Image (cartoon, rainbow, N blue to C red; front, side, top):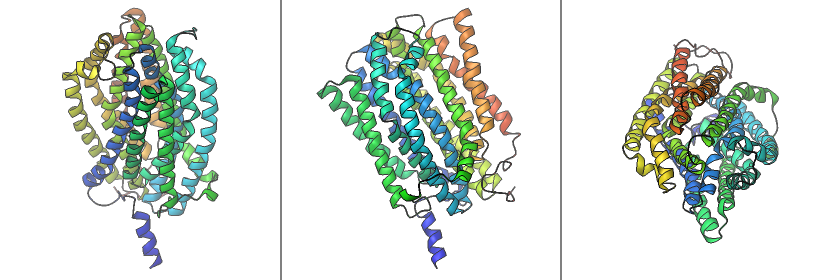
Length: 471
């Protein structure tokens, strides 16, 4: 009787993806993820919109342009923590609940240590990274000064963001995508209210936007850890058990380090892309403002691929945990098709009404002109992302993070930088020519990913032990 109750407890809030309708399971899991990521993007967009309404283009460009710096450091952690998500999903699928618990407590310990490290590194390196990003040594420029204020506050609170992300990743690994979504909604509403109060009531400018983000993320972290501490699943968190289990840490690192390197290097490469944008033909504040508006919409268009990639990782991890290779592959195809359909529904109106969307964040006609141009010409190529993101995510779910790392670094770092060097020196230094460095990388990554995927033997890398795979 006790064992039956334990099994029910382990499934009460999670989702077992190893049985039942693939389409139904993936849609039920994907809807909260899509909505959650939507709120995450709205959360980020509100900061930019609020600053854009102040009419201070330097502040708008600063808040919008520092994304690559944040993504470089935070991306390293998110890549590393993905190793924990893969291990937990495989152990959960295999019903090895004690190993789930050890991995949960190890991942939280890892996050606490990395939170301290990234806080110190982020605060200390902010001036250097801004000089690199803006391609300037003039620390007195308005964009540099505003960016410096924003980043120092942001990095001072980055540990709370990291703890939220690892907690939400733990919940998603066992099939619970609903509660991370609820917490994001609460956090997004809090961020919006604080943005409006800090910027328009207290006239705090970029500092107000940064503090609103940090405080809202801290709230979502508290809510996530409250749920983990009260959970009746094997992911229940006990503060006294937070320590390193080095056997599990090695497994997290084995999958996580390649993802961390790929994510952080790609973000670092985008710092150089931003420096090319800063040197593009035209008035810098308008060019960078247009690029900022485009990038905020880019994150929205990217949502289907990003969300369904997370679905694919969890689905593949759980099904390979019980050795069901064929079901895992079917799930990948369903995730790709779903992402493609949703992406088309987003792409068409964005292209048709590019002027409207280009002016959402900053109504300055000069800024809107650049943003609209990028939206019209680059948006169709996001269909490549549905392929390369989901199929690479499925490889990570199988425990193979090395191949996606090599493929994505080759596409998004090496090829992109070669393209930018050649294009800006020998063809054109216009913003649109620079922007096409992204579709070039996406297309190359898609071709190489599909070639590798169709020759890869699933089950070759197995975190939870040897077992006979179902064909």
